[in-house]
Amino acid sequence: MAFTCATGKHRRPSRLRSTTARAAGMATLATTGVVGALAAPALAADNTVERTGLLPVVSLGDAVAEKIDAQAEAQQQAAEDAAIEKAAERAAREKAAALAAQEREAKARAAREAERERLNAFTSPIAHSYVSTGYRTGGSVWSSGSHTGIDFHAASGTAVHAAGAGTVVEAGWGGAYGNQVVIRMADGMYTQYGHLSSIAVSVGQTVAPGQRIGLSGATGNVTGPHLHFEVRTTPEYGSDVDPLAYLRRHGVNL
Image (tube, rainbow, N blue to C red; front, side, top):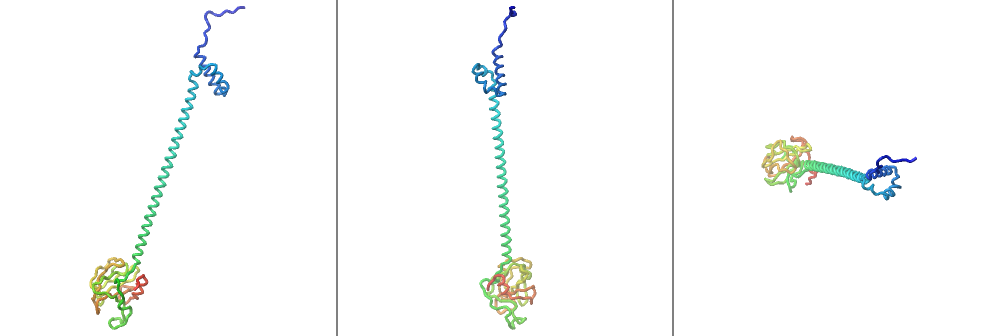
């Protein structure tokens, strides 16, 4: 029996449709791993797939993803570097602050030590002089029968210095001692400076070791100008101790 075609002609699929279909097939094969074996012959047989734009789009997507990943890594690295730099700066500031604190403490310690040394420093009441009359020397010239202090050789007007740091408790006329100054020392003892021609300090004043407190003279009961120097346990007469031993105990050699 003979078959006849219907009126009209069967139309071939357009080149665009066939090309698109092949490209889609290639994409499917690529996802299944078959494209590795078939891609080359298929493309060799018909290179029209290159004009579909499908495979280039896939390649472009990979490139963009790699670029984004690279940017993310760079940003992360930059953030880590910034964090490291901030940590280093913070550590440097903390170290500088610690060093400054140590320096301040060292200065304060040095100042305290200097103050202690100043308070503990002693000097001779008359510079470059010598003892002309010793402690407990006997004689009728003293009402107690003996000398209650020591006398330093000094011409009238010679500067008289505080033997050590202390506070002035008496400054004025002292009867037989003439013009006198009595200082309560930092160690609790008292020093007396008698027969002064003038007084340069007042009661309540704090004095430093070696500070000038007056000038030597011949006021009171004396036979000539000199400095009478006593050391006492109280500010009162009769509580005297050996002045030379006291000064030597504090480093003053006479």
